[in-house]
Image (cartoon, rainbow, N blue to C red; front, side):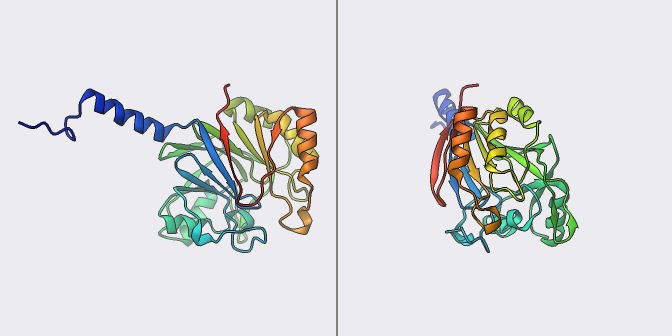
Length: 258
């Protein structure tokens, strides 16, 4: 009788299945694409879209209809971060992860949205991708409603990415670095609403991620900055590697050995 290996796979086949699944769950690199402002696609094999402010973003070069996602993450309730998140999550049929109060608001307004709410030090896993909420020193509101606290998000699937959201510099960034060991840190440098290049360089030194990417600058006149100033100070004074990205540029970052 012929053996049905789909029901009783051989040991070798089970190893292949296990290795394939393991590769899907844990990766040793991430592709990071910047869509302008604070919006990124993090490609671990599964695509995570963070803070997709596309419509109304003068620096955006992609249409919201063209964004592909397996998960959407939003750091806080301001319109330049919520952006097109609901549209993208619904169009792709994927969950949206954010602070719990903002998740409640978005689900209340969009009945067919799958919003997953987390809080500080809390986390959730979607298709093997772990998302943890960490502190950010900022504010958060959505259409005049209280949207919970602002967050940074640690997004990891073998490689760990720290998206700081909108934030000022604060001492507990050292603790975030010690606890989560981010391989890549995405830091705002625009000033006015967030850290300046000088403050962001200090933050990079505290976090100690081996790779740092500046964001949230030059979208509007109020946040005009020269990222080269940030790069110079961060690299010379804090010994981190800064990559200044162009909009729609994609870079590959490896997992660092901790």
